[in-house]
Length: 246
Image (cartoon, rainbow, N blue to C red; front, side):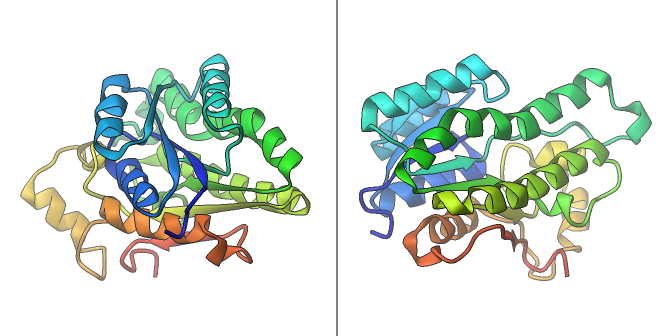
């Protein structure tokens, strides 16, 4: 019960890494909101876990504000924000990625961090307490070719994490990031271009521990960084990557 009594919003919590984080947080005693563009998926996950469900577009300011208000109405305050929602473009030469795909990746992976901070940081400042966890990627540290603008968006998230950490520390707010390697999530096929045994073997050959990140791996790491056990840790971008970035 390391998160007993804590309240937490997990964006993109209906599937993939987000679902792993939701399950772990619920098991550790947190009251959790599953905030996801897939409203039906969020409701299904909420039934399984006892969490709240909220349909949200994290790239839209009004939608994010409504999410934050729903959480305040339910709990009074938010202790933990996990910015997990993210997308990628299909692999391709950097000059061939469409402007629409570029805009969408930056809106979901970067602008959302600003929007959720705008909506929730004032409440955390008022309480002089809070934790923000951004789910970035090894792509922001050791980029793979042909995922160019996705890589850049995750590098942005890591820098945003560090600048948020130094600015918000005097207000008692910790900000960290996790850098997973490619995992067993709905985005895996998009990262690889095609999900075939050959492509999986190629990806796995770059991971020393020889497996993909699992939702449970991210849930365990997120639980630690968002718990009071990590009260002296801020501005960290922790790799959960099986050695990929060594």
